[in-house]
Every structure is written in structure tokens, then in C-alpha cells.
Length: 149
Image (cartoon, rainbow, N blue to C red; front, side, top):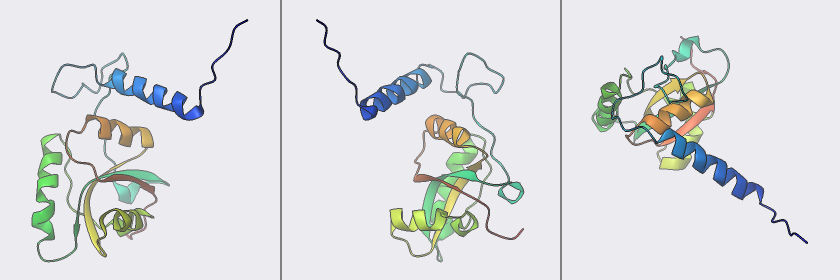
């Protein structure tokens, strides 16, 4: 008589995520993978222009500060770190993505946050960036563009 052990959905998900992370972390180079590489290697995804986004997009927020006099100086390290890996970005208002401001307020306690984030067309691109990026990540937010061009 054989007994079958039942695996909970949470344990199965943890196993799948663990395998995915292990597979994504097997490279030995400090350089990002080439965009044309094959074999399942992660590549640095292309950021999008939020003003041209159609529908939902995802932002990986790498820095957040309270709006005010020294906000640019507070966020400059995040801007510089993103530039080092090839992303040209500046601080922008999370009010321009539906739901982002509320998420950042809840996470940081800032009443009027300003953030540095990289927008992506898909959750997969945001996840690839989050996996490859060695700097700090505050959160990832999905939403639609809410500011006029």
C-alpha cells in the first residue's frame, strides 16, 4: 500500500519560484546578457515611454522621496544607478500611473511622494529588470497613464 503525500499550493508555488530564481542566477558574468542571447538567459528589458503606453504598464520604483526642496538630491543616487545600467530616467510623479501614488504612500508614509521608476510594457519585463537590477527596489506597480501629455 502506498501513501501519497499531498503538496499544498503554497509549497508548490514556492518550489516553482525557487527553481525560477535558481535558473536566473546561474550566470557568472557581471555584465547584462545580450539582447540577442538565447537559452533562457534574462536580458535587460526595454523601458517604455508612458505617454505612449496603451493600457496597463508596470513601473519598478527604485527611489522615493517626499516632495520638497531637496527631493532632487535625495533621488539622484537612484537616477545615477539606473544610468549605470543603461536607463535614462528622472524623478516623476507617481500620480501619472493609476494606483502608484497610493501604493507609494502606503509603503513610505510620504504624503506627497515623488519617485524614480522605470516603466515597462509587461509584468514579465518588470520582473526581469527587478531580477537583474542590483540596486534598491521599493516596489513594482501596475496601472495606466493618468497625466496629460
